[in-house]
Length: 390
Image: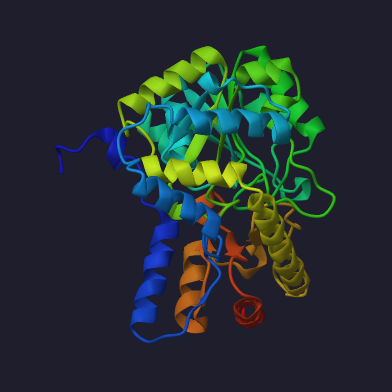
């Protein structure tokens, strides 16, 4: 339609949703599909979080809240950031959003103007470039190397910079690669960003899902310059299995925090009131730490199982993911573009995976271990059969 804006017609529909819809259609037709495409924990939201939501509803907590969130949740987030992330944010610097996705979009809208460039390491989470386009910006995709565990280096960042560069997006731990940036790597990137006061959007939604000896380092925590340049994004979807609750947040320097709250006030008004009370329980309940550790432990078992299986498959290669719950599998030797590969894998072998092109790498696929070991075992066996046949 001619009446549609250029900003929306330039945006690419989500391939992850397309795979989900194809999988649902096959299952509705009676087919058994082994789903390795999921992007959410396969367990239910903990009962203590649900109970806090029920109680909030019974107490009539169903009205508008301040745009930036209920004061007690912002206070709890301030304390969480200080304890877990070594970050000193006053509650007034925190804005509760309708999911971390909205937090990312608010941050991009607050910074990016028409024609501004945003550097995005590739492979990237599917929505980053589209959000930049919707804000009128230009996504600059920097291809990372498998040999460097799919992480952008300070040198690659500096080489991609131009006078139009306004922001860089860092996702650590990362989706789809599971890569985790070290303190030294972050410090190098911050040093480059400081040359031209480039804002860093630090998406840390997978912070609690880090394995082995790896440690999550919050970007804004490495030094004062990082703090001054960084908008930290996080939420409850992955750590507390609250994907459908849609509660995320931003934490930022005071002037930026005020701008983010203003955007929030003119878009969604506030995150769902009773869901905020569930998020408050996620932060304050003594049961929360046990839930997170059990979740992390279960995913680590699955991660190690898949790593051993995938490394034994010919014609593909994988980097051990140190965080999140995905493997990004480099399928270049198979000679198939990722959409074609995933279509064959789904229709012939009944295994759902996400094409790498959705993440900016057309010769790979993302496999998730957000499912049972039985499904992983059968799904990976079928994926191996597929790879051996090609």
